[in-house]
Image (cartoon, rainbow, N blue to C red; front, side):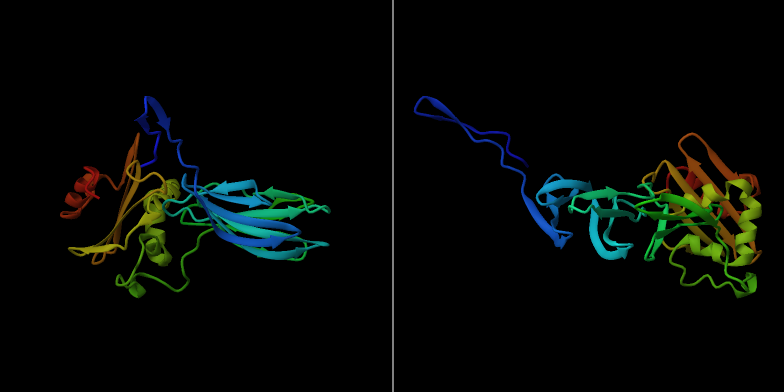
Length: 277
C-alpha cells in the first residue's frame, strides 16, 4: 500500500514524510541509431519505452525485437500489446531521421487480435492479419515513405481431405480447432450463416473442449469481454450434428432453436445460459 503521508508530533511541530517516488526497473536496453533505448517498468503498471531518458511510447506489453535494413536506413521493430486474454501483440516501428531523432509508428494500429505475422523486405514490411472462421483478414504493406497500403485479404479454410470419418475428438486444445475439419466447418457454416464470425470470435478465450455424454462441447468468450460476449458449441459425435449459441449483453442467439437440442445437451445449454461456464 502506498504511503500518503505520515504526521508525527515532535516537539510541538508536525513532520510530514512525502510519498515515495515511483520505482523504475530497466527490463530491456539497447543502442540504436545513436540513441540509448530502455524499456522500464514502473510501479504504476505500463511498460515505458524511453530514448535518451525521454518517454516515446508505452503499453502494458512492450519488447524491442529486431533491427532490419530498409532502403538506405535501418529501422527498429518492437512489439506491444494491451495485455489480457488472447489479444496478442501489434508492431511498433522506430524510424531514425538523419540526425538520429526517432519517429514512432504503429502501422496497423493496436486493435486487439488483428495482427498475426510480419515479413520484412529491403523496401517494406508486410503484415498478415489473423483470420478465423467467418472473419477474413487483411494483408497490408508499409514503408516509411509510402505509409500503409492494403494489398489483399485472406480467409479461413479448413484442412483439405478432412471429414467426419477423419475427425478425432481427443487432444484438441481449443474449440477453434474443431473448425479445421472440413465437414465440421461446413456444418457450423450452414448452421450459423452470416453469424459464423461472431460465433468463432466468442470462442477465442477458451479451454480445451470436453466430452460430455457423446457430445464434444466447447465454451469460450470474446477477448476482453468475458461474461458479456460468450460462445458455446457442441458436436454430436454419433449423429454427426452441430449446435451453437452466443450470449452477448443485449442478445442471445441459439442454433437451432433450443427445443430442437437433444437432451442432455439442452440441459447443458440451459446451465450455460444461467452463467455456469
